[in-house]
Image (cartoon, rainbow, N blue to C red; front, side, top):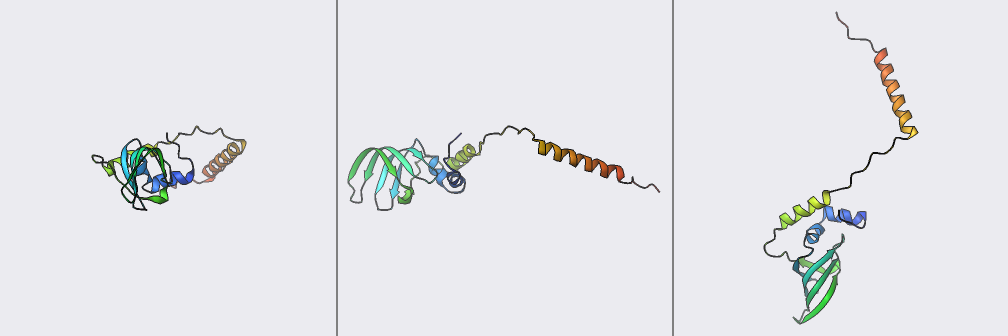
Length: 140
Protein backbone atom coordinates (compact mmCIF):
# COMPACT_ATOMS: atom_id res chain seq x y z
CA UNK A 1 0.00 0.00 0.00
CA UNK A 2 1.22 3.47 -0.82
CA UNK A 3 1.83 6.20 1.68
CA UNK A 4 0.08 9.39 0.59
CA UNK A 5 1.43 11.66 3.29
CA UNK A 6 -1.78 13.60 3.92
CA UNK A 7 -5.45 13.70 3.01
CA UNK A 8 -4.76 16.59 0.64
CA UNK A 9 -2.17 14.55 -1.25
CA UNK A 10 -4.51 11.56 -1.43
CA UNK A 11 -7.21 13.85 -2.83
CA UNK A 12 -4.81 15.14 -5.49
CA UNK A 13 -3.80 11.60 -6.50
CA UNK A 14 -7.47 10.68 -7.02
CA UNK A 15 -8.67 13.88 -8.68
CA UNK A 16 -5.78 15.31 -10.70
CA UNK A 17 -3.23 13.97 -13.17
CA UNK A 18 -0.69 13.70 -10.38
CA UNK A 19 -1.34 9.96 -10.48
CA UNK A 20 -0.16 9.85 -14.11
CA UNK A 21 3.19 11.34 -13.14
CA UNK A 22 3.30 8.99 -10.13
CA UNK A 23 2.90 6.08 -12.57
CA UNK A 24 6.13 7.18 -14.27
CA UNK A 25 8.24 6.48 -11.18
CA UNK A 26 11.36 4.40 -11.96
CA UNK A 27 11.18 5.39 -15.63
CA UNK A 28 13.36 7.76 -17.63
CA UNK A 29 11.53 10.78 -18.98
CA UNK A 30 11.84 14.46 -19.87
CA UNK A 31 10.20 17.28 -17.92
CA UNK A 32 9.91 20.70 -19.55
CA UNK A 33 10.11 23.60 -17.11
CA UNK A 34 8.42 26.99 -17.22
CA UNK A 35 11.68 28.87 -17.80
CA UNK A 36 12.29 27.17 -21.20
CA UNK A 37 14.72 24.66 -19.72
CA UNK A 38 14.21 20.90 -19.38
CA UNK A 39 15.32 18.01 -17.24
CA UNK A 40 15.92 14.48 -18.47
CA UNK A 41 16.43 11.59 -16.08
CA UNK A 42 15.00 8.87 -13.88
CA UNK A 43 11.94 9.77 -11.80
CA UNK A 44 12.61 8.48 -8.28
CA UNK A 45 9.60 9.82 -6.38
CA UNK A 46 6.49 11.93 -6.98
CA UNK A 47 4.52 13.29 -4.03
CA UNK A 48 0.84 14.19 -3.96
CA UNK A 49 1.49 17.81 -4.89
CA UNK A 50 3.43 16.63 -8.00
CA UNK A 51 6.88 17.61 -6.72
CA UNK A 52 9.33 15.32 -8.50
CA UNK A 53 12.61 13.87 -7.27
CA UNK A 54 14.87 12.67 -10.08
CA UNK A 55 18.20 10.89 -10.34
CA UNK A 56 20.99 10.76 -12.96
CA UNK A 57 19.76 14.00 -14.48
CA UNK A 58 20.85 16.05 -17.45
CA UNK A 59 19.60 19.62 -17.08
CA UNK A 60 19.38 21.68 -20.27
CA UNK A 61 19.30 25.40 -19.55
CA UNK A 62 17.53 27.88 -21.87
CA UNK A 63 20.77 28.35 -23.83
CA UNK A 64 21.01 24.63 -24.51
CA UNK A 65 23.99 23.97 -22.25
CA UNK A 66 24.06 20.65 -20.41
CA UNK A 67 24.55 20.26 -16.68
CA UNK A 68 24.75 16.86 -14.99
CA UNK A 69 23.33 16.13 -11.55
CA UNK A 70 23.18 12.98 -9.48
CA UNK A 71 19.95 14.07 -7.77
CA UNK A 72 17.52 16.79 -8.82
CA UNK A 73 14.29 18.18 -7.33
CA UNK A 74 11.61 19.77 -9.50
CA UNK A 75 8.97 21.83 -7.73
CA UNK A 76 5.44 21.31 -9.04
CA UNK A 77 4.98 24.98 -9.82
CA UNK A 78 7.93 24.90 -12.26
CA UNK A 79 6.62 22.01 -14.39
CA UNK A 80 5.22 22.88 -17.80
CA UNK A 81 5.08 19.42 -19.44
CA UNK A 82 5.93 15.87 -18.48
CA UNK A 83 6.76 13.73 -21.49
CA UNK A 84 5.40 10.20 -21.43
CA UNK A 85 8.05 7.77 -22.66
CA UNK A 86 7.43 6.17 -26.02
CA UNK A 87 5.78 2.78 -25.87
CA UNK A 88 3.73 3.62 -22.77
CA UNK A 89 0.02 4.35 -22.94
CA UNK A 90 -1.18 7.20 -20.75
CA UNK A 91 -4.60 5.58 -20.32
CA UNK A 92 -3.04 2.27 -19.29
CA UNK A 93 -0.71 4.04 -16.84
CA UNK A 94 -3.69 5.86 -15.30
CA UNK A 95 -5.76 2.68 -15.01
CA UNK A 96 -2.90 0.82 -13.31
CA UNK A 97 -2.26 3.69 -10.91
CA UNK A 98 -5.96 4.00 -10.02
CA UNK A 99 -6.07 0.26 -9.31
CA UNK A 100 -3.14 0.68 -6.92
CA UNK A 101 -4.85 3.61 -5.21
CA UNK A 102 -8.09 1.66 -4.69
CA UNK A 103 -6.54 -0.91 -2.38
CA UNK A 104 -7.49 0.23 1.09
CA UNK A 105 -6.98 -1.31 4.47
CA UNK A 106 -9.94 -3.32 5.74
CA UNK A 107 -11.05 -2.27 9.21
CA UNK A 108 -11.72 -4.80 11.89
CA UNK A 109 -15.25 -4.60 13.28
CA UNK A 110 -15.44 -2.51 16.42
CA UNK A 111 -16.51 -4.01 19.69
CA UNK A 112 -20.03 -2.93 20.61
CA UNK A 113 -20.18 -0.41 23.43
CA UNK A 114 -22.80 -0.36 26.16
CA UNK A 115 -24.53 2.52 24.39
CA UNK A 116 -24.91 0.67 21.08
CA UNK A 117 -26.08 -2.51 22.82
CA UNK A 118 -28.74 -0.54 24.72
CA UNK A 119 -29.89 1.25 21.56
CA UNK A 120 -30.21 -2.06 19.70
CA UNK A 121 -32.16 -3.58 22.60
CA UNK A 122 -34.59 -0.61 22.74
CA UNK A 123 -34.98 -0.74 18.97
CA UNK A 124 -35.80 -4.47 19.09
CA UNK A 125 -38.32 -3.90 21.92
CA UNK A 126 -40.08 -1.14 19.98
CA UNK A 127 -40.25 -3.24 16.83
CA UNK A 128 -41.60 -6.26 18.70
CA UNK A 129 -44.24 -4.13 20.47
CA UNK A 130 -45.33 -2.68 17.13
CA UNK A 131 -45.71 -6.18 15.64
CA UNK A 132 -47.72 -7.44 18.65
CA UNK A 133 -50.13 -4.47 18.74
CA UNK A 134 -50.67 -4.45 15.00
CA UNK A 135 -53.92 -6.12 13.94
CA UNK A 136 -53.58 -9.00 11.53
CA UNK A 137 -54.83 -8.86 7.97
CA UNK A 138 -58.59 -8.92 7.73
CA UNK A 139 -60.17 -11.86 6.02
CA UNK A 140 -63.50 -10.98 4.87
